[in-house]
Length: 239
Ligand SMILES: Nc1ncnc2c1ncn2[C@@H]1O[C@H](COP(=O)(O)OP(=O)(O)OP(=O)(O)O)[C@@H](O)[C@H]1O
Ligand SMILES: [Mg+2]
Image (cartoon, rainbow, N blue to C red; front, side, top):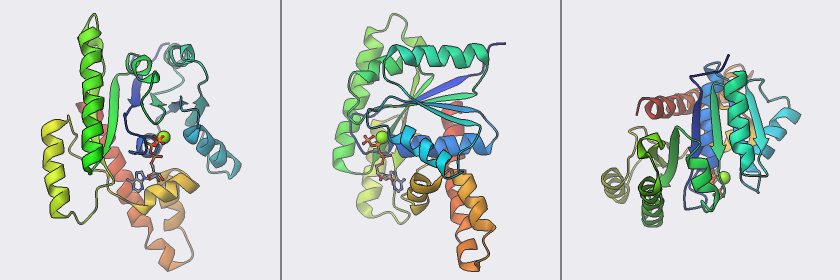
């Protein structure tokens, strides 16, 4: 039976390094922690997401509900999504895209239910974030039926826990310019650890079970990061 509830989420940003891959890993952590099946398609020739998943498998930190495939040809994206839908092998498909958006952006966008664009609080990110927004508007203008296009969400990423006055101004500007979701993704070491060692909920559980009380203290930060990721996912799905 086909999975009518399959949700496809793509990360697209004109600016490299804004956090596409990191945000997707966090969202996948949230899904796997909620027993959802994730298929991630890495369209980035640098294979950051694919290599991460391969590394996790090698260290025993992989998960049966997390499958990451590297995509070589654009038509593979549609094939993979169709197979996941028809075979009901996934609840979520996540698509990571290369640094600069590039030619992949249009092709990926038309396959998605949701597009997320991570934006960091800097003037450059705001400016290039606007270019991403303009790209999406152009896509809408060209579409035969714009209502079939995905919903676009901006996710503010790497926000400092203690915001400065400058951050506050940029936050305000971002909410005026972009379709931002309310949950902010903080600048957290836990996301860097996730990059190195595995899914957030696995790391949280490992820390919580550690013999060393000093390590156990850190578990709560991983649980907080996981909650943050769950909030982001819920907002995307509701929006
Ligand atoms: N919220 C965060 N907290 C801490 N570090 C972060 C956060 N978001 C991203 N980073 C770090 O910033 C760097 C760039 O992030 P990432 O690789 O996710 O960006 P990207 O948009 O996928 O980049 P590229 O365009 O090159 O694919 C990584 O080293 C990542 O660990
Ligand atoms: Mg990336």
